[in-house]
Amino acid sequence: MRIPIIRGLIDRRVLVNYRVDPDVLARVCPEPFRPQMVGGFGVAGICLIRLKQIRPKHLPSFFGVASENAAHRIAVQWDVNGVGQTGVYIPRRDTSSLMTAFAGGRLFPGVHHRARFDVLEAEHDYRVAMTSVDGTVHVDVDGRTTEALPDTSVFATVAECSQFFEAGSLGYSPVNSAAKYDGLELRTVNWQVQPLSVRNVHSSFFDDRDLFPAGSVTFDNALLMRDIEHEWHSRKSLCGHCG
Image 1 (tube, rainbow, N blue to C red):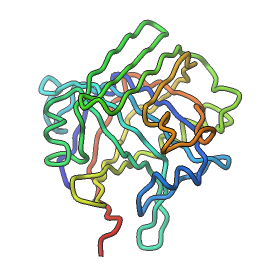
Image 2: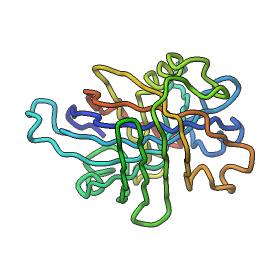
Image 3: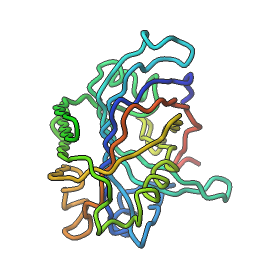
Image 4: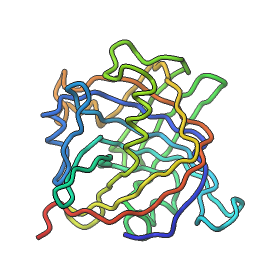
């Protein structure tokens, strides 16, 4: 699906990241995707993002709209004409925006589900909770800004972690067609992250023991981004089983 370039402001973005048994994660990834490895683990997580001033690139910011959004993400690899690619597979997108929910998969890349968000923010404290309107998906994360990653993280430094997620800027989401995935690339002007020390995290997706047996998935780290100018660029769709 092709759309005009969209620009706006990432007012707040929380990336909650897990390390996952790669064999387990591979079963969650449809073709043509396979897990991208870091330190022997797969990496997956949730992006909780508040967007503002979202509009076609050449319109002024006062035409823009705002919304809270959540995306469940898996760092993946795939091949195009024998050349390896990296990015993220996004099995589920949720949004507070009626417009985005209607347009997603029709006029805008990726199916988006309607959701309700509960957000509390202070100078250093952030809590974001999301419940989908269909009642199938819940997320709740509560944390405080800090300067370092957990000692147990698969990433050695904040810089290494930041670079990994900045490189994973191309995401693919399911559309209504079977085994077809819309591509959307995030381009930022001023990429910058700060670690969050997480006091509590809950995810109905990653807590699902049918998908992730006990011991196969562990919280790794969380990152905060604020006030990031950015653009969204559509990319050619991928097809998993197309002949």
